[in-house]
Length: 478
Image 1 (cartoon, rainbow, N blue to C red):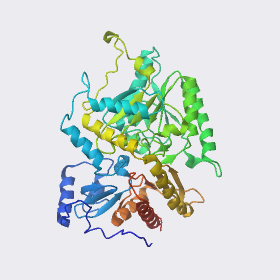
Image 2: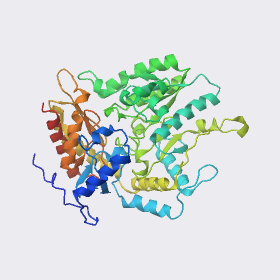
Image 3: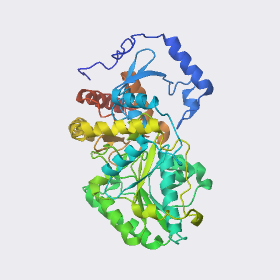
């Protein structure tokens, strides 16, 4: 396929502002070998990196700029997945980097028990202004899984403080994912991550997902999502006395193959939770900060959850930080004399770290001073137009999109709905092709997706779509 931009000859190209030094292949290989002697990588079967197999070559990265990552040989890779959905405004963003450097000169960290600092105060004030109305209190943690743990514990503890000690269960959705710590893992439903640890996990109630991939032929997203609230309502009716909260990923189940649903489900779920006296936890860790087209996904349904969990894009992809926002009624349930033992005694050593807060403030400042959401709308439209043709591909079951998240699901037989055997690792073929062409495409199973930094250009989107299309052809040719 002919393209107006280079896609293969990157080996002697360096990013603007770099030293121009291109090192030898041997140094790149040496770093990879040193890594494999000691580093155990996340979400990885380490044998895939074994030098003899080369199923997934280890790629040391030297630097980044904008949407691009560069290895030690000068080869570049367009970061189509924002380094696991964290990066919003590009690598080495000068505004965010400068804010961290400035903060580093005054205060690197202080514990947030009995002490405070200006960055965490300012960040809390701004988050309260930006998030759905009614969320007034911010509790900080280190990462997304920790935020889920906070929200779950806080919900349970709230009901305990209200004298409703029987409320100790949670309702989650099929195909959901909320993190890897034991509490967060229990609240998810992707068996690949969860099954082996089942003996260690608390018991949860699982409701059918509103995932619109499962809609009837000709049925609209809204109609299907409306229909799928009924099983949730039945569970709430049966278990309301025992349930603390329902937890959801608004609009997109990211680790669950990027499956998506209509905002009406969120609206109806909020109404149902209010009716049956159950909290609603919105896990916006992956979908917050503009990923779905609005600043927060809950905005599209006009709802306020009881707990909103944020991380990943909160710091623009720079430093670990998460926050759980909740409303005044929850806060007041813990506010009492010390001897009442009603306090929320949960802590992390780096809670509200000033450096991370400075990065978050710089990230929010970019949203405040630049037309990010409006500019993204043009990119969203361009991405939708460029992927439209893939809907007719004989091995593409669906092309779906919410804002800046676009997913292409491969299928073995489009007529019968037969999926590819997961053991064939078709997505890995696309990953390999992407690396050869200069793109970081890391599919979720048989689903290729784009979740790029917002500084991507239409021409770079063209490159990604063309590369993915070529990869899909290679992955489905037998």
